[in-house]
Length: 115
Image 1 (cartoon, rainbow, N blue to C red):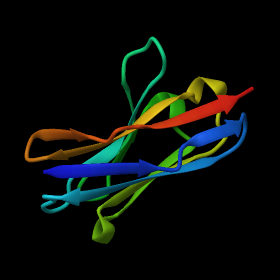
Image 2: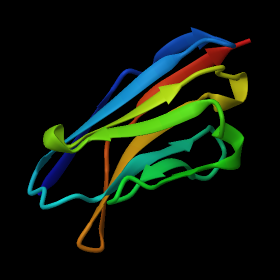
Image 3: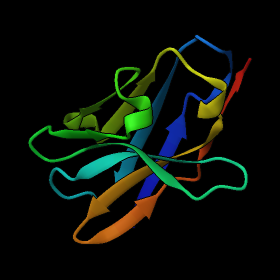
């Protein structure tokens, strides 16, 4: 069983910054793809950023240049530094881990950006 626990969400004004963290625990084996998705009210869940084995990364076009994903493999933790936040970044942010072709999700953390 894999558990993902997110932290760091909250309310911030437009232009501000937040840092999300996600710690993975349980049956973790090796270096896996980890990252973040988000879901705004009335919209589908969408990719925000991923970090793959070998440290390659992938970002949604809407966050490139503003968000940075990083990881600490020793702690099985992934981070998302979010700068220059916009109201359209408001969503529930979900941590994601792919291991042995199985998808794992955290419970989500709310990020609200006020204008």
